[in-house]
Length: 336
View 1 (cartoon, one colour):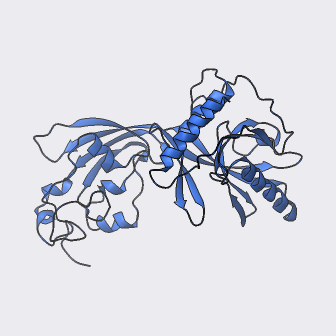
View 2 (cartoon, rainbow, N blue to C red; view 1 turned 60 degrees about the horizontal axis):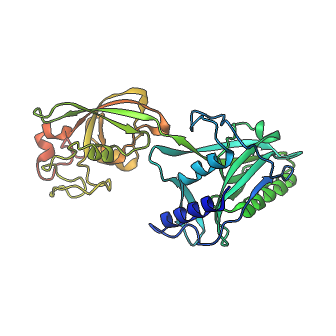
View 3 (cartoon, helix red, strand yellow; view 1 turned 90 degrees about the vertical axis):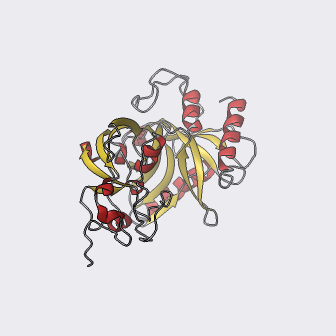
């Protein structure tokens, strides 16, 4: 991989980190194409037709370029600086991350090649799978080129996180897992990966409570928040006369924080059950309201990256005077 490419990727990932806390330090890249618990080698194919063509461009490109394309779509979030906990996200909204857990035999060798795409001297980095053979090729769930290792588990209690680690620390974690497996007298370890996948497409048909507004159909991607999708597409989400759930004598919305209960929608059709299930807060907000009402700020479309069609009505509460009266939190005004 060309040094200029590595430098540009490093600068890109570092700038992304400035939005929160710097994810990578501005240190030079180290050239690294290494193999974890297989014969160390720099012999990698000059071209590779990715098996998972459904996830990425299926045209024949060099392995380095293909991995660089994946790396550029990834960014590292700092979840807990004191504990050193990180998590990956994506820079390209058309892609999401899938969590894959797979069991692999470790003897006689793991059979997993890793390529370090970016690294600093603080131990953080970006390492992608660059080769799968031997035991790794026989894993319980297929391991793909471009996957990034986020954790290693042995048995039910031992686990080592590897998210955002450089090559050396990643291999060290696998080595610890191999030692722990010997102590537990098992030949299996469990590997957890983040896999970059294209987000499924969803289609939302919107019926307005305002009879003067025509129906419209909007397109979105799996994993999008329903309220944010509607607003981005110019759909009217609020009836400003709706009283807030958290302060029932006031109007106005909470900006999507999930506490006011004013961004309601009625679900008329949900093909493939693409809406996420209610959480405890949404259950509280929609208590005593019709069963098909949802708080759009708490709902995600295309849950589990499943595409399909959804039909909703916006502002269903507008048809109920009780919803617009001071102090009334639900269609059923009776108290428990």
